[in-house]
Length: 305
Image: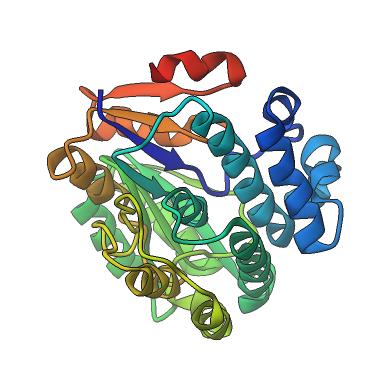
């Protein structure tokens, strides 16, 4: 079994996330203790106790998900399991970079806290939106985008799985895309997000975060880190940093990333490290023959062999 580790982004959260891992492994508990110290507030309390409305603020949720995923990673590392490749969806790429020893945990926490703040500020609440469009292929969704834009920003944001594409942009344009997709046989739905991620409206967030990223040290990856923006591994720390810069306002090429890991990287199994199993569900659609390892709690570590 040749395993890749996957790290989820926003949309996988729940109050209480990571607590069972911290209770079982001191290595995992230290991740949360470091997060509280680095960020200067009780992120651990938010993760484990809520309130949910405070946890789901993107400036809190982004570092909270990194802490949770890295807490699971530290528990996995105690078993001696090593990935053949790592990848993270959107925000999850920061956790993947920690797993590849490219980015220090403290830096990942600081960066994602700032990333969340900048993304929320980039577009006033209510002006942007995102929608998932199911049951249409990629080209059909691109035609919907072209026909629904109407002079406003509207673009493909996430290519998550065959027949599962997310679009983002100005709210009115996204709403037009939803109606048009439905007319053309798709199954669209608006997403409950606070900002239109991975589209050109995020340009101010990219411009704000880029100088911070440039000042942050990145080491060369110890295992292949497949980036969202290029759907192939970053060979150096500098390349990994550049991919994070471009990721903010570019589409997440998740289908191609999974395909690279199986077709070029020799991966035969995927383990998701973090709350939920959203990414394993996409793997089922992209590469149904691949083994999927769900780590719901410490008792599942034996699945890694």
